Image (cartoon, rainbow, N blue to C red; front, side, top):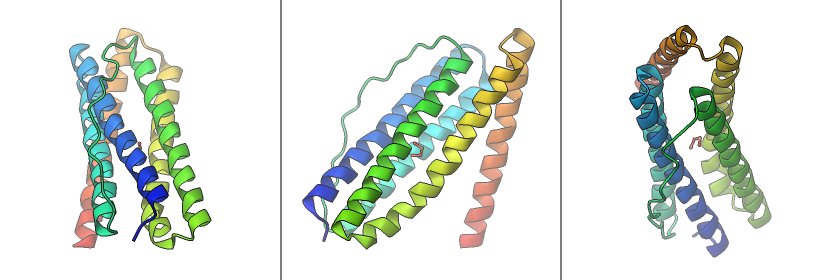
Length: 177
Ligand code: OFO
């Protein structure tokens, strides 16, 4: 059984993860249009991951006798100034999500809800990784600039980062099986 307060806070998190999925999808589309194939693939993958994060909370809420609410689709921005801006926005959004997860942890402690606290540990780790990844990519873009050749290099790098992330995920999946 989950408190009404926690149910509301988790539904807010569902909406935030759902929005992240839409937001990154819009960024992927913009990158595609700009010919940044690697960046687009990376962001498509991020978008799918965010949807998974949303669903994970969705199922958890059902499991603990709460009522998960399907969030409405909010139109995210669809135009961006540059690849650097895209990754600055990803980084900003990830920081916002981390702050929201930390708030949820605060509610867990205030309500002695150790079941939800344990469930959220996965998100704490995930946010640490995602924030770090977004910041690293942003730093690289800042470092090498955004001229034609630099963009080509950034795009290739993003392809590599995505391939490494997918391989790590496959390994983790194989270990779990
Ligand atoms: Fe949902 O993982 Fe970041 O935002």
